[in-house]
Length: 234
Image (tube, rainbow, N blue to C red; front, side, top):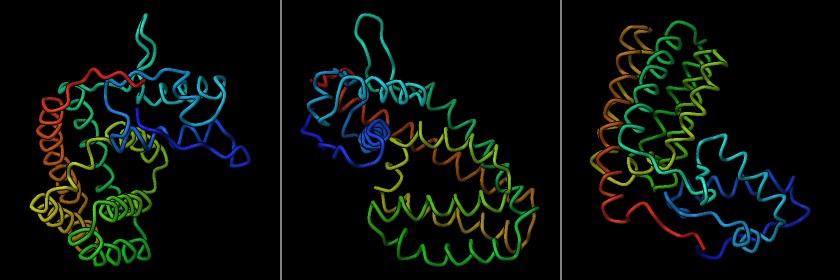
């Protein structure tokens, strides 16, 4: 495990700060799938007590980013191909519903906001950096969810997005995939904001996630083959 961030004692509740930092390190593949998370090492890494670390680990376990193994303790969750397929099946269904509801419910202001953001994605997403692509895509989904006007759907998708966060960045690395993704997003925007067609909007969203799922499985297999799944986080 590389040296980490010492958290200032006065900054926010310590447990939440540790959770946020560890979550991001998992999603950024700083903490790798299969890495053991030893309490004493984590205490030194973040400069906090065992109590704080244990509370943070429980939170991340509830998000399924960490798995508790008998006689071994916590590790960064290792997804199988079957796990990824299942997650993307659910994501495809939920995001299809988001597109459908946006087309039915979004106000003119919400429609305009989505169109305006998509127009800006030529720079931030298509020709952007890894970081700006992630930010732009997150904002696209936020606006789409706002227009769908279903808080339960928003909460459920938040959990899915967290679990597949480590896989999402693969889609931002390849210029060809980014260009294809931009075309798919264009079809979503067209169906949901111009046609206001719930059926076509659902289909466009589902097709986008179907392609993302295929890429996630392909890249995850490459990643596991190159790096393995069992690492010691000490």
